[in-house]
Length: 247
Image (cartoon, rainbow, N blue to C red; front, side, top):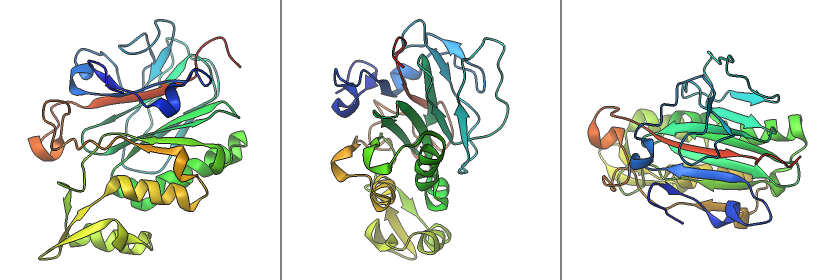
């Protein structure tokens, strides 16, 4: 559902799970004051007692695992495109402006992840690598993980060229199912469909994957867009975390 400034999904918002999450809009992004690599308490859309952590994103496939309580003096100065935690009271966050924000939640193992996936990260396998990390570190099975794919550049607007298509062809066997050829060596890429296909290939059930079918390029009123604006004016923040008081 959509509030004045954030989007949530029923699959994560049910009373049983009580997991906190949101996909942010451009309105929500204003004046957050979230510094890269610096934990912050009580940003908009979170409980006042919750820490929120966002890190430098490098269009790679590495994940930062936060498996301890945070402190105000903590600094995370590396570059990662996925954040994973099993710690109640920590919201892991990613920032996007056309790339795909992906939120993951395993209600059995009580672990969450926030993932930033552009075409580079998606083709390089950030989704299967993050699911594999959840399994190796926390015992999560892909079939028990809920995944929500947030607003991003849609297949309606996301045009890519031959270098991108070549990489996609080499890294994803069903690449032709997620592109719509446009001629002159160009095509429209369905990045959300690529992410979904990768998760399903590992065993995540289709019913456990939800998609927010909004294009960041189309909806200037709701989202920032690097493609539309030709520069990074700002980014949306999307996050997920376990509430305090539950183990």
